[in-house]
Amino acid sequence: MRMREEYGSKTYAELVGRGRVHRRFYTDPAVFEEERARIFRRVWLWLGHESQLERPGDFFTTRLAGERVIVARHTDGVIHAFHNRCTHRGAEVCPASAGNARNFVCPYHAWTYRTDGALASVPLEQGYGEDFKRRMDTLRLEPVARIASYRGFIFGSHAAQGDDLPTYLGPEVRAAFDNLVDRAPDGEIELAGGRTVQRYRGNWKLQLENSIDLLHPRILHRSAIDAADRVDHGGQPPSIEWDIVKANGLTLREWDGMQIAAMQGGHCWMAGFLTKAIDENPLQKRYRELMVERYGEQRASEILAFNRHNTIVYPNLFVNSRVAQIRVLQPVSVDCTEQHGYIFRLKGAPEEMFEASVRMVNTNNSPSSIVTSDDHEIFERIQESLGSGRYEWVDLSRGLESEEGAQGTNELPMRNQHRAWAQYMGA
Amino acid sequence: MSVEQWHRVQQFLFHEARLLDERRLQEWLELYAEDAEYWVPYTWNQQSPKDHVSLFYETKRLLGMRVDRLERELSPLDTPMARTNHYLSNVSVDDDRARAYLLFVEYRRGEQRWFAARCTWRLRPHADSFRIAAKRVDLLNADQDAGHLRFALPF
Image 1: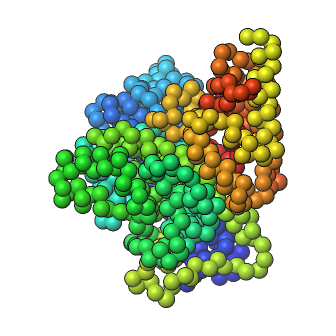
Image 2: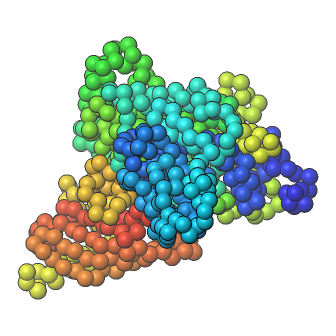
């Protein structure tokens, strides 16, 4: 294996050490290729949400482990996922990002597929030989190996074998999806409002670490926090898009006391950190009353007390139940990553809640964000400088001796991600 | 629309561009009315900033927060500072609305990049000049699949 030749005795799994990782973990194109094969092609990855496919014929296109796929609801109501590649000569059969279709017709020679991927017709069929009718079944659009939904969230996997979706997610991750849906007074959510795509020229794992790194916000985001501090609200309650910037300014002690959890499979979560002021917002109060009306005081309080910020689903999904947002990483290459931000409308909630979510994504997860732009700037500097010098290891030892009962700035959740990485890469 | 009026509006737009390019950001902010909206839509022909994400959608208060950060403390994103040129052309004026094409060139950390856009302003008379009530910048590639690297400065 090439790795052995290049790094002496090191296997991929050995790039993850005790409290440290080798720099090639972030910089080696060969490692990236292996990650595609051993992690991204094996696990369950988020594809979309059932609300994007309300009627038969509704479809959207996306990427699954870098491969282009179509997800569609067939006439019988069943959701299918298949590769966006004509089985004839390989052209993309569906150029649209979303829509409603009776058939997918390849623009090159009009091979025509149904919304379950079956090949329905080809021009001058007799020219393909006597047995073509029988061969047609093997010429359906290549299905994605597995597809499954949890509470309306659609996942796909290129691996035919493996844990089922609920097992893969585990109870702590499922709770984040449950809570996102339960926060809708009508018990239903709808993916809406488009998506943002932030691109950065750094490795995908840098964002994965950063989103559970509680030591950095106060330090790196200082200029944004200070600017938010100085805003005069003119006596009005602050809005959520301001609060999410301001809230990064907890003291280091406060960050260090925050609850975190590292779960099996590399998943993790951190507690919420929005300021108390946000609950005083009249909109939040109106929403709370609606929730109590629908669920009763006790259940409504339970749902709203679920206070997490990021729940990170290994290897590439961030669920933010409280602000009805998810983000997904699409690694492009070893040193380039896209981060996609999506929001949900909570059915039965005031429309202004959705509008606030839209504004929050604009300030937090758009390329113009004054917060995440600083993160991405740092990722690029890491990516540029990791190759310099003779030191081969990156330090992730914070809290290594106190993983039992870890909280706050303990780097346990990052080590937990990388232990999962080593397991996938070694197995 | 008199030639003189067209000239006055055009000079005002050039002035706004110059303030951005010369980093006179407080002065730039002062060109905006208190209830102004600064909008860079995410999609082509986007109808509303309320129910769909945008690249920028900022009130004067949010713009002020952005400018304050850029002016008072250097964030990593702004170290070193980006240099920009705003090229405006095809300026037309129709009542309180001004339109122009924008070519925005930015240089930072060894890399130059550019954006092409169509801009629309809604202007209000103010003393012997104008205040911007709304500015909309439609980037030709706003919704490109690959997304965008971060923007340091407003367009």
